[in-house]
Length: 270
Image (cartoon, rainbow, N blue to C red; front, side, top):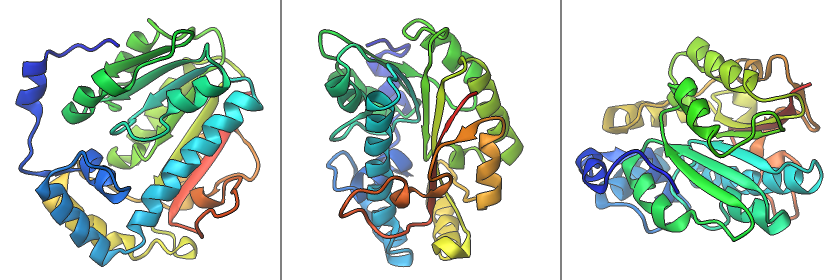
């Protein structure tokens, strides 16, 4: 596990007085790595937008299905998980390395509490490699430079961007980030993405006041986007079936939740 900050650096960056997305998300999926302020904001948002817990679970289950599909059916052995959030049950490397023990995974996040947990929880088996880099999605060049120490960018890579581009408020900047990252990986690589939407057909309109409350009381600020804007992130890539859908309906398994206002898709670079 590699990181660029000392424990004292991390402690200095850790603000437990303001709710933070990684910790609130952890609270919504039933985790223990959160503080009272995260629970309070999480409860307030859930009161305004009760389906948020279903979205959090659906997003997590989508990750599992996507990683299994790519490792089992597409033979992917390298994963770049940008904005991983707090480690929980069945992280990307655990799923991938159960299928392919030699799989190589690089996690990227810039939240200090994630960094602390990553040191102890994101450990690899003896055959594969699991690494963690402390970097910001707004700086894709730094992510790519440091990930190249673990991943071979001459071979296919699955780029995971689950619930991360919604923290890049400028849509064109978000598109540039995706373009830059996908330009660095070879043909046969994949983009795995989820993103909240305000589209009515997925029930997203109620998300808008909850996000306004979030942006006034928590960090980092967040935005939802239309399905059309989210589809544009896949420009130049080939969407795999069933295309861009509610993440709960992407290759669903028995017991999968109903439609949630969170788009998900997997695409391949031709």
